[in-house]
Image 1 (cartoon, rainbow, N blue to C red):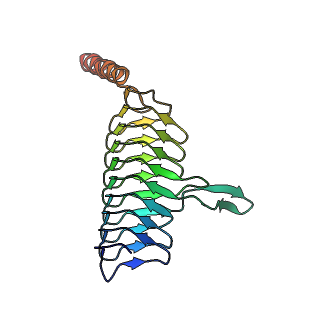
Image 2: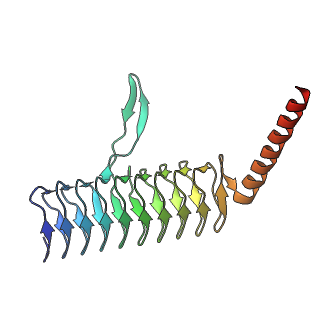
Image 3: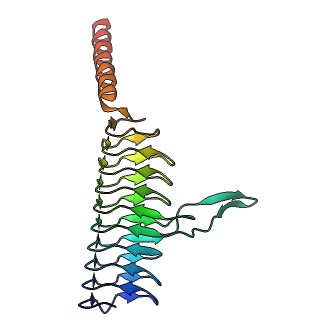
Amino acid sequence: IGMDVRIHPSAVVGPGAIVGDGVRIDPCAVIGPGVVIGRGTVIAAGAVIACAVIGEEVSIGAGCAIGGPGFGYIAGPEGAVRVPQLGRVILGNRVELGANVAIDRGALGDTVVGAGTKLDNLVHIAHNVQIGRNCLVAGQVGIAGSSVIGDRVQFGGQAGIADHLTIGDDARIGAKAGVMRNVPAGETWGGYPAKLMRAWLKETAIAARAARSRKSIDEKEE
């Protein structure tokens, strides 16, 4: 335990954990065995952290679950069998997590969130995801396992990213988009399934005009 650390009496810090200088751990937070927490980090009430290395000046919101086992199963003779999840979660310096963010630890390697990245409330990051630096992720976004996100990527609310995809640096993903293919660097995508935003908007406008024309024809026939 470092200098000037504030740990609420109801919080739990497991054996072998390392807590840096100036850290604050609020009521009912749980820090698992061996977790490393960098200098100046704030962990809000009810957060649970396991199998993780947390950088400096990180903000972890209330109710976050960091380092839980990922959703990994294989078929067995009696149904799904869980695959052991052996990796960690690595949060870079100045990462900010809103309330109730869930970040799963890696299956073999690590799940990584780069320095300066900000995650809004209710975001889910699955096992082995790699997120770059200074990304912005709005509420209720879900990123499936083993996807790789570049630097400075922005996600609108409720966007969903399929597994094993790559999203390039400076890309932007619109709200409620369903991304099922790789997104090149710098492009803006939207819709479901997601595509270039201008193509999706054009297709949506054409479909709306067709619907209006059909309605007009139907009204005349009546």
